[in-house]
Image (cartoon, rainbow, N blue to C red; front, side, top):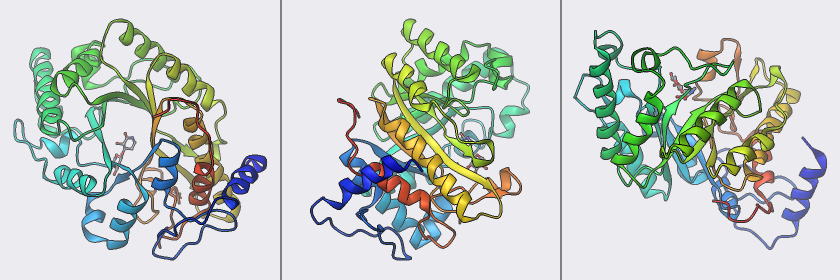
Length: 361
Ligand code: XIL
């Protein structure tokens, strides 16, 4: 934790007029000394920022605490899985948007915006697609149709779409995927054009991980979006996923990296923040984790058009981390019993009394 910054945030918070108490969690969390206990979404609104979470729609249906925090703490939601191709088009031409529609309705009732995730990716594709023997022309038409039908279905109800996800390798070369192999690199521009035709008002994002700092991968994304913009391709923003692990050390230079995308006239967003650790967790690791979250949010708040900061789930009770990274976990803002962790407090403090550069949001 950078002490001068935290001290400044706390000092500002202490001198504000009495603020409404809000439910930080079922465990009855107080804001701690000097930190007002307002929900993240209220604090973020003061900074003209949307704060979001990925939503596990089964938990949303079954777990009242999860539901209350999803609605109470966040001003945007991302479906963690239910807008992915394997869910929305399990058989060719047969769509199932039921689970996604329920989440979009929930968002509407709670005054939340929706990040659509995801249209073109190499993972979680239905098997009819990956094991079908399609020609390149057929596959192009399949992709065109899927994008058009899906974006049209949610037209006017999705704020930002992750149009293309994880198209690059860490060395900056294009990832070998079904799309690159069969359609060539032009699939990226086509996907943005097709999404734009289907909903001209949605903000269209390129989204990836390990791009938060400067390096070959973020350079490749930068070159891509700069070229697409120059060619008139409708790309509006770049999403930095923000999956960090404290064992690798916390990244530096994120704000400077976000800034160069901002200078291209693009929106930016942190789209999937979580900060994992090798288990078991301890106080020191949780403090480092809090600093990781704070750094990600700080980079966003310093960036003029960083429009949203989304965490990839908010409670350790439901997290993709333990099953994806064996031996790692505790990556979220709340523990398994919905007690807010130091990371939650760090975001609260960081959102409090921050002056953003003009014309954010
Ligand atoms: C993950 C989900 O969290 C898991 O539940 C699922 O099993 C696999 O996908 N980058 C992305 C997300 O863009 O879609 C991934 O979500 C996490 C990494």
